Length: 253
Ligand SMILES: O=C(CO)COP(=O)(O)O
Image (cartoon, rainbow, N blue to C red; front, side, top):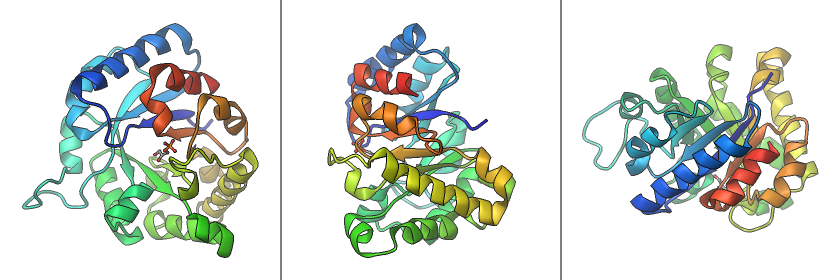
């Protein structure tokens, strides 16, 4: 059975006291309301990871992710955070290749392959983000484009390594726009990506890997999205900043 996951990417939001308040509200609400085996992964700004770790300690279904890590082991890279550092504070996941990193920090598929490698080397599961722009969806083979992101950044891995990766399909045109992909659009891509993985690694491996959908997910759209057979959960941006809304999304999963 694939892991069901709801992840909240806070991006560059929340001050220290707000980060603590949101986390403790989420933990309390989940304790009271969330049944079942859904994994909740919070992706706060890295500066809060150590503090927030204490607030999720008693909740085994909660985990933390960094939003990024360096592709280098250590050294003179001012401002960067290494996978080894994340491991040393007990962080289990890291977002790799979010479209905002690709767009604003020029992260290429090749660089992201190196980040995936170093995260895995230090025992951290990459949440690998992929997705096409609106222009690509309208004018290009958009499924081929996203498949290629996966080929170039993940297909050098062994099957065992790949199973430590979570994939998040986030169409860029749906991020922060209020334009959610329809369940059919998302399912089409998720099924294509799973088939792409099956062609390389076999059906059994493809069946085991969790593929999340991200892009304007709200409590209102989560039910339908998560009901699709190849959508194993969500990577939520804006709606993960509100405890009530995000808890409702977790409950939809
Ligand atoms: O980028 C996202 C999550 O990583 C999605 O953001 P929104 O949910 O705000 O559209």
